[in-house]
Length: 367
Image (cartoon, rainbow, N blue to C red; front, side):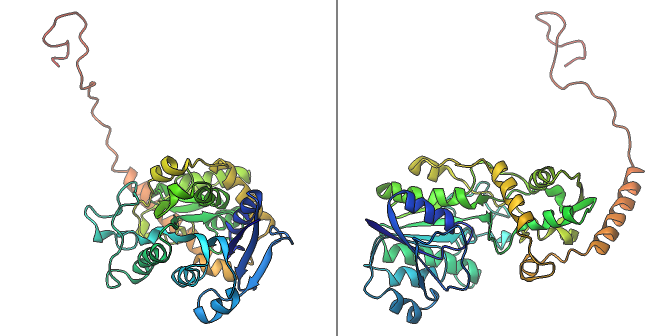
């Protein structure tokens, strides 16, 4: 039987990867620190408990072991890749979209912001001085492919689904549970950022195992085929919870309560080009994103984070409803003042000619 190791395995996409590999006939092992287990991973899956952030803890744990496939979703991926050089037939590293130049520092590109959509060959951050975190992600990608020339790298977007450490959806769900009548969103909630349901992302990763020759040496953007704006995400969750939630739009620089739900780093679009993974590996969403979002909402209703606990602190959402009410009052007052300056537009005819008779040089409006 073929063998596979997932480094991580207990995060959002982990159970989908485990079960997808089992369905493909692999004997699956997961390597993680052992700080928590999840019921979605069955007893037939072996566990190696070790810290994948350091060679001194990782090397003894995998000594003498080889695997047909290794998928690294957790730890220091560069270190994991180097540790498994010569120990696996196929290595898949999971990175992230912050590798792209302009993700954190929009002014690094001209015009400002990321390309829309962002293809895999868009420029990545090249120096630590430019942006350290992005550089570490981008340089790790190269380290993975240097250690595993026939490996593959995936640039994960925001992942939604169960077990997310920063569940943006909870910002909406809690407000609805608390019977809030409105929610503040930045710039109308019209920002576009690629998201991926954990099961859909896992499917995309497993396609590299199904098509190893096509995936060899490649870097792939991944995410749901269909994307929603932040406003649409709020609308879907509210509809699932049968609650009418008014959206109040504020400029991004003062929409403080919206920074949790929008994961706002900058107000620019962060939409990925998914053409490559579709063309080379045949990717399509196995679960429609609207249903995936509804499932995610239901899971968090059943598994609610502690109020004021670790997850809410990670979200950086204070759920400060008094401040939200004050901001909403300022908005309504300012909007009312702005409406006082409304002037009726002067009617103008359609700009293109619409002649009433044939062969006229100009129509009846002299167009």
